[in-house]
Length: 210
Image 1 (cartoon, rainbow, N blue to C red):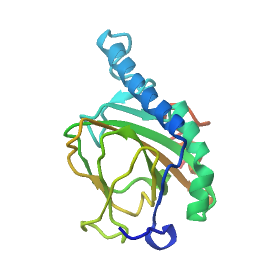
Image 2 (image 1 turned 180 degrees about the horizontal axis):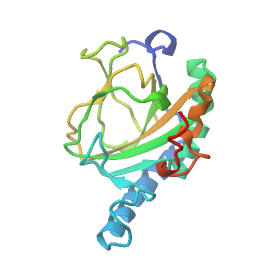
Image 3 (image 1 turned 180 degrees about the vertical axis):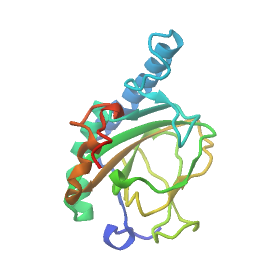
Image 4 (image 1 turned 90 degrees about the vertical axis):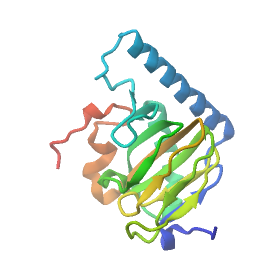
């Protein structure tokens, strides 16, 4: 695969973006969060409509494992890698939100583009079995796209609102990805994805602020 340049291709890969020890911590942390959420739901300690602890599956991948919006540990990584992403994109950014998903065998991520809070996005491989992501750097719809395989710690940056990205049905057992989303400073109304500050669940979003 040719070398990808964010300015020309709107895509950039940074290898080993975080120390292995931190990636290992996140991997075990997110597995533990999933195990705990399943226990809380099975024992009926929380309502299935409670999302502060995360949720099993979402609108994009209904049969996935744990999904976490704005988790404090994940949002901390959002801040930690902001400077790296600004350097690669040559943009002044503000953080919006993080989102992680524990994928399972048979999961599929259909072709899509993202909402405005994801103008500059990155997917960080946390661990599990290899699983390619496809992305179309031209911005055109329904093209073949580039197939990219990330190793734990590898970071793929892309313009989430403009470029279609997707994953074919997963043949492995599990794979954990952490998504980091930013936008340019001129869009200050989207700071923290309209939450008062980072680390808060999505029900703290001020949807009235348009």
